[in-house]
Length: 141
Length: 141
DNA sequence: ACATAAAAGACTCTAGTTATCTTTAATTGA
DNA sequence: TCAATTAAAGATAACTAGAGTCTTTTATGT
Image (cartoon, rainbow over all chains, first blue to last red; front, side, top):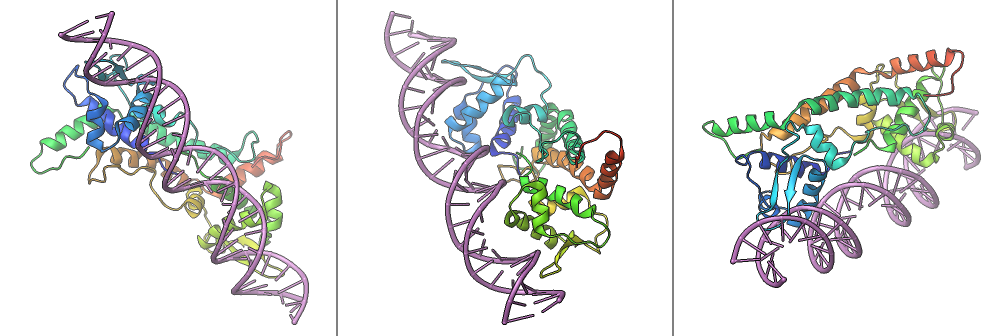
């Protein structure tokens, strides 16, 4: 029971794209290098993010990826759902209605998701840039 | 990304054991029947619960499983940790220190685990028995 | 010692994740 | 219009974790 690597990469990639100068696009090649992934693999992740409307893609010579002009406030949950899909962590094995166990599990899960929905990538980026502007610090996002 | 079936079975099994008359033991055969599992498979789950100290086991003729005399207040998280192990849902793929993404993910996860730690099986059992004492209700725990 | 029941070990099967490689489709610029 | 570029899609392979079975061993009570 772990979040997939893809979700991990997706979050880092989103941060990377958000830190680009306004309006800039970036290709999968360059993004892949930073995380030491094969471009084709990262490409699939980027396609998912695109389909979820978190970023926009344009093929062709001056193409690449950029932030979506529409969805401004992207949350952690948005990214997670884009990659993993919107699913429940727990489903009662007995498939009956009104399972009290399932209810408790779902409530707890909701606590986590609520927090993940409240946490915006914009806030994260702010903290990262702040961190980088401090005296001694390594590249870490 | 889902809780394992084993966790599911473990929770249902714990409820079953807790609902036994005080001091009673129950064998893996009978427990397995209720959930339509093979005894050997459920046995592994029960062994994990035993090693975690949530239940006690005695082999031999009048043996079986019973609640632990020591750990009285078993939480959902206790059961989950017994089966899945105490691990994190998210580990930064870049393996660097102070990853802000990891921090957010861990905080959110903590929200869920806190709730799971607060939710005791005893409370759950109470609600189930209450549910069963009402006019129209199906067997559902 | 014998019957019973849990524990441990070896093993299979399956599904999902993690990739890679190749082909196709869309866009730009000459 | 044609060539270069870049994303998207498809097929496939390798790996891993989870799910489950079967067999053997260990512990307990009569």
